[in-house]
Image 1 (cartoon, rainbow, N blue to C red):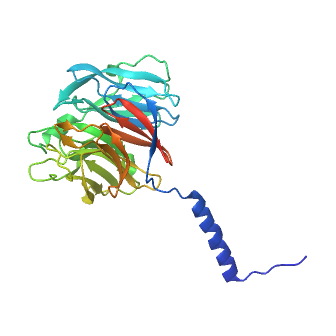
Image 2 (tube, one colour; image 1 turned 30 degrees about the vertical axis):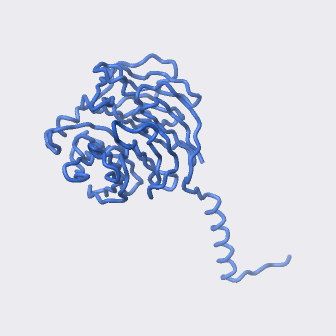
Length: 328
């Protein structure tokens, strides 16, 4: 049998070629344009969206805003079947928009969700909940008052709290964005103690930052800001926040950012809620990349987006009450 003897340079060249081909096969390009298809309609002012490990979608519905208790959380199966998980949450109107319930987060069979008006964090065991089950009673879901501590710090004038979005961060502690106090709070995973993590400066003189969305890439947080009235175009920013709570501007020049998601490459995609005139202009919402390029437009007040696969996302429209699938 003839033996082949390869030199070291030849072997290194071959190895580089194999690795280069492998990297090429696994590369996921960033989206430059997203196409859409309808998925679910008829939602009552949806605000937050999350995916569980079975492919179910969980969504918060702010309700009608008629100072009643018609806010809720629904589970939607991959085929589009909707089941109410919990109802009877307070729904109010503030400056023309329906508010109350905020975003939600799924992990290991538990659903974490915020009700900013009541100042509560809820942690529900949803591991056995399935399509067609009866709704659970909100009183039976473990909860924690977060607003009392947040308001005690008086970070905003007038004193305010609206716990709105949340994410797990370093060492599995929970981090909560409070849009009312322009801050992020850390909830200790063992004790449940709430502490101030960082506080954002004004967007411009006399205008609050109003942080809305938060994600964690394994090393740092990305946070979007909506900014307060008059919602001036170009005032909104994407911040990064390190593990010690120090913030810095990542990108600026955005308008009314209402949500954020990471691409398969951990690049932020953000939501423009809309252009404000006499109210938010119809279909002025967008999905933007971190450079401000529009990759999907003509949305009615988007509030949240979640990545379901490398090239597929679910997007909420607060105004239309819909979820659409976005792909490229």
